[in-house]
Image (cartoon, rainbow, N blue to C red; front, side):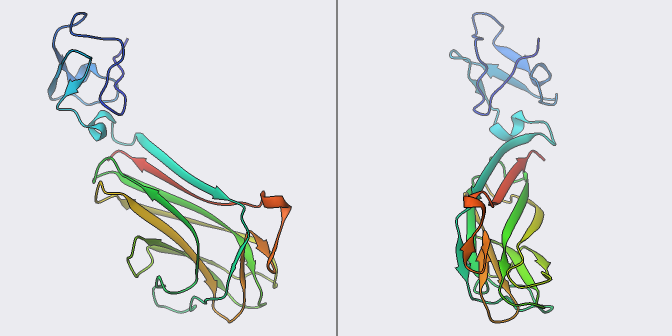
Length: 206
């Protein structure tokens, strides 16, 4: 039976009294061979980081926010060939994550639910990170009518780049003057808060 190491580098129920004080990494589930680690009293592994416990492609952590709260905004996002800025549109959701490794990959999945008040225009849903002015990714839709509720998906894949906490933000707006309604239409909520938007961030070992 393989030895399982949790995210803190702890192997449960095994001490130096029950095994030798040295294990090869090939003995550990989900960790590639090539180095050795030492087991101290209390079953702690030395020289093994959280990120190295996970084989490439393994899910390290998942964080999520889901909200059915009604909100509105009137700031536009120009529908043109420029990158949306963090002063455009209205911020409707944020979610922070602290990556365990700078080399990890992050998959950011967004569902934005709502409507716009102008027929015949396009709206944009944009993803931003911290205070960076340029959007990382954008999704857009042209609803067929005003107050027509849409669910706009957005997915972005990136390298974490740091182990510091980072916050991702979702802003949305349409190209024409009017009101963008989040989790509703025409400034009114629908379905008792169960019409919900979300951000899900998955950290994957590289």
